Length: 277
Image (cartoon, rainbow, N blue to C red; front, top):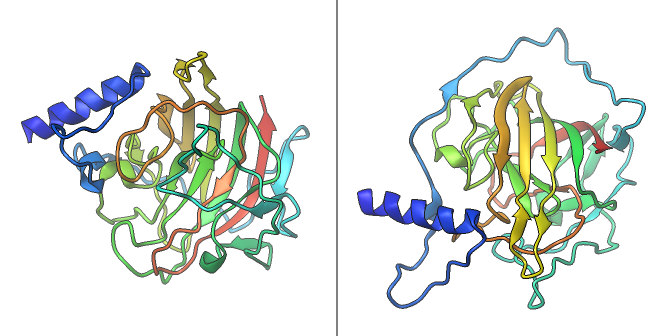
């Protein structure tokens, strides 16, 4: 356990300083478990009760409304993922597809269509404030990461996790409110399945040096149901399921919503808006 902790500390430090971590014959083969943390377990905090099922936070006058319950005119089908948002051979992310988004819109809600894959905004962003409301089904089934799994991918490459983490156990840097496989939330502020959760996200985009290393890394502050779960958290690099994140050069990017491949019932979204900063 001490050796594993030392390994994770070392690779995290390398990512934070912008150095590359290359595998060779003397290093262990990376597995998903090597970037999963189970302690410390975030304290459970019960968010304040909502007085109704009505939308409580309306968009501001300068907000760009990404989903108002009517259609997917602001969205398109996202490109396929390859081991989680890996750039092409030129180390550039190619986001836009121009292909129609085909998630389900009904009764004012946007529901994941897992057969159609991820969707993303047609617009790209750098620094922003994002508001999004989401719900896992009341009758959700499955366990751990196979229970209402989705995600909000900032600039198309950095994932803020969506999962049913209400009285459910999994690795702590994979629960709702985590920067997936990087930073666990300060507390677990999930509502019960069937109840609406809200994310309010303040995101600062990275800047880069000529060699692709971070000049200033991306950072994010997140409130889940009005409770602070990420406080100016430094993001180490694009999200990976296997392996450690590394700084990778990119420009503006979309907001991407994940259609996770687990067999559990699909999540729904509503009231999505963004303010450019």
